[in-house]
Image 1: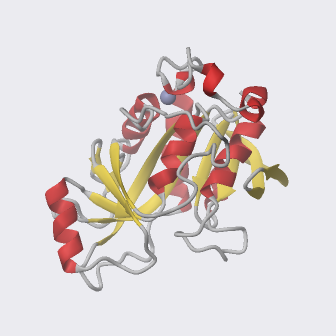
Image 2: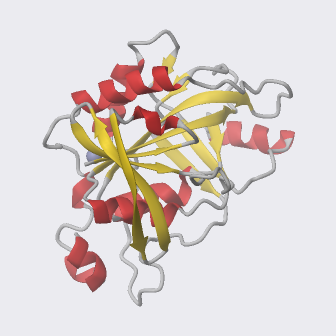
Length: 259
Ligand SMILES: [Zn+2]
C-alpha cells in the first residue's frame, strides 16, 4: 500500500476515494482516506486535519506514520509547498530533496519514545532513492523546472525566518526551508517505510509578496503522483525496509508485532 501525506483537498489524487477509516495509534487517532493510485491501494492523510484546523508545526506526524504502518503502507510520499533559501530556485519550481537538516525542537524525536531502550536509526540516505527517482521522472513530464537534489532545513515555526537565519541556512548548504520534515522522516526510517517528498516552491524565504497562493493544482499533482506510483517497482531494491536487520533484539515488542 502507498501512503500519501498531503494538504487540504489534495485527497482527490486517489483514483477511487472510499470512506475514511480511523486508526488508533500510541500517539493518537488518525482519520485516513482509502482508495487507489495507479491501481495500487493507497491511504491518504490530510496533514493539517480534515477540518484544516491543525497548524503545520503541531501536526501529529508520529501518529500519521504509525497509522500508515498499521494499515500496511510500505512506501509513503509527502506533498508540500515549501519556501526557498537558494536564490537559484524560483516560485513554482518542483523539488525532490535528498537530505535534510533538523533545526527544530519537536517531540518525539523517535517513534520509540517512552521505551527503555531506543534503537538508533541510520539516517544516511534519509529519503528513499527509488521513490525519489520515480517522482523526478514523473515531474519532468510536466512544464515546470524540476530539481532532483536539494537540502531541506526544517525549522520550528510557525513564524517566518529572519534575514540572518536565511543567510545562515544558505551557508550551511540548505536550499529549501520547511516546518514539517523533521523528525517525521526519522519515524518512517524507524518504521522501515520508504519515504520521500515532492515539493513546489511556494515562496522565496524572506522576500515579501513572493507567496504563490494558487500553488499547484490537483490535476497537475495527480498526474505526477500517479505517474510516479505507476513506475515504482513492485519489489523495492532500496534498504528502507531493512533498518533493523540484525539488531531486531533492540526493538520493543509492540513494533515487532506490527513489523
Ligand atoms: Zn525505499
